[in-house]
Length: 135
Image (cartoon, rainbow, N blue to C red; front, side, top):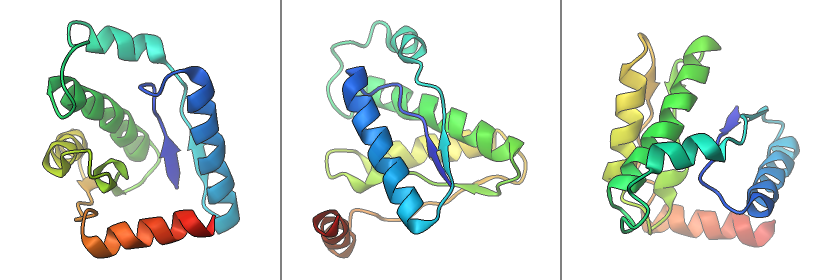
């Protein structure tokens, strides 16, 4: 299933565009799409004081933590045994930072694992662009 929780995406219009594209893609592939609430107020509260942190800074860790914590809770409550994320596919993100959030979130729940993959290989980057071009 795809669990969509992205309170960090602004403005709301951009959030809706991304959400609808994810829903469309899931429908095409026959994958369940779970739409978690858009709660930017919670995100702003949690990121308070880090407004000027650089990309890959503390705010990014906190943002990944927030989103992975919510993902892990959903997974645990719904009988999933693993979580993963597409956040580490971007060359603009620090994969170790993303993975650290995934591991911390999964450790909160017995039997839940974080599925860590190296998504930033040349092969995976090419595959991502192939899928995007096809769509």
